[in-house]
Image (cartoon, rainbow, N blue to C red):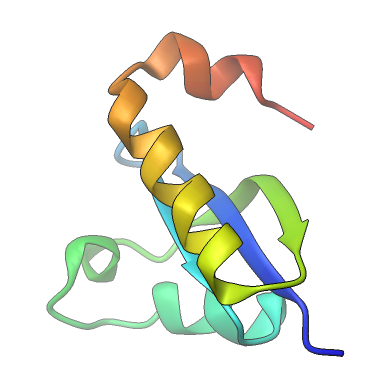
Length: 82
């Protein structure tokens, strides 16, 4: 069975969090975030996983990603640290 993840990345250089979801391996997804590209995470390469949750469906992982984003709260994100 395929595993999906909702995740939060943290960049100490930017002091910012990034929230996403993926069906890829976590190692591959982090590698892609840390490459130089035009997206939000492309300008720095120090992203690390701050919080990860596992789901059995893509829909659940995306739903959780959207739920975290909807909080618009750094305090909430930091309360999730695992």
